[in-house]
Amino acid sequence: MSILQAIEKHITLSKEEGNYFLSLLQPHVLKQGEFIEKTGKITEDFIYVKSGCLMTYYTNDQAQEHVIQFAMPNWWTGDLNSFTKQVISAYSTRALADSEVLLIKKKDLDGLFERFPVFEKYFRIIFQNSLITHQNRIVQNIAATAEERYLDFQKKYPSLEQYVPLKYIASYLGITPEFLSKIRRRLMER
Amino acid sequence: MSILQAIEKHITLSKEEGNYFLSLLQPHVLKQGEFIEKTGKITEDFIYVKSGCLMTYYTNDQAQEHVIQFAMPNWWTGDLNSFTKQVISAYSTRALADSEVLLIKKKDLDGLFERFPVFEKYFRIIFQNSLITHQNRIVQNIAATAEERYLDFQKKYPSLEQYVPLKYIASYLGITPEFLSKIRRRLMER
DNA sequence: TAGATATCTTGAACTAGATTAAGAAACTAG
DNA sequence: CTAGTTTCTTAATCTAGTTCAAGATATCTA
Image (cartoon, rainbow over all chains, first blue to last red; front, top):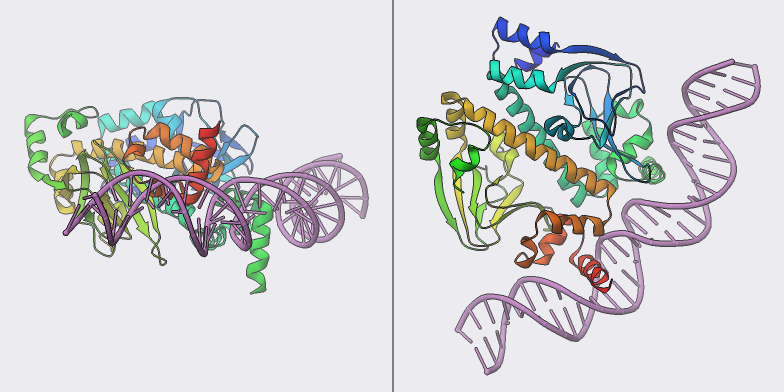
């Protein structure tokens, strides 16, 4: 599915609007492991995943990496805080598999909103849906056990477990790889 | 600050747009402890807090309440999932202090977007900012200790601790009231 | 003012999950 | 094919946070 098809699930675009939007996007190919954004810099682009899979993670003082989200095809991702406020990023974004992405610069997105306000609606819907997902995850983090969160992760990202290192899944769940190993064994034995 | 003043920090409104928006809002007064939305029903209104303070929480099978968010004056709140998709709500929203709120019905908000698309921009910005806050909270939940989360809560909601029962703060932090007590003592002794 | 109810604290015993360390598997790259 | 690196597992020990139970404060109501 093309990005325009994905967008047109939410809004209706004229030829002109669609073409103008496409003209703002910069395609980019990422090899597995490659970075697209790095901690310490200002995030210039909002990222649309065409194919492959990315992850965004936070690195703390002790150099531990904490995965905030995985981004699947047709999702937008990146450090929204750094992008929005143009402040130094606390997160990095990396390809977990060979991936194709489309990038849009902050000033181009702002210009797009000015010129074709219909895109405000699109991103309003995208952010609204994303907010719902995030609220769900917060509830899970405070209300569910690690095992429950793992089972839920498998449901939500059925394809991911095969090719994402388990340590990143553990990090996403907020546990250590060792403890994820224990959980997995426990589940196998049942 | 009136709701129109708050909105005009983000967008510019004509008299007509402002008045039409106001005409859709239903004012409501809540006494401390009163519910505005309950688990099990479809959320009809999106809630704007004029004064006071609300909390939204999830109730699990074992009847434990898990606080998802506190809503302060000039914030929007409610069960966004139930509101957006018109499905049964998993959350309840209650006044923590005597409060005044403004309610907008889903169909009225949809109609507003149709008639005056400038409000798409406003809610796009509101949701975008809220998303940033939620991402932050997720990082905190997976990367910080309970004590760190508590200190951060105090910074973020300096006024709240005085009149919100500690058990709800504990719930918001994802810990038991007993453990919050311990943390508080530990911090006092230093 | 007192009695009832909800909130907060304390402490002892417990458990989910972390840490450390080491070995086993699985992927690189030459 | 093999040496080197990363990932995954296992086990022992440790700790952050839970559970349970009781007492202390505070709040509400009559």
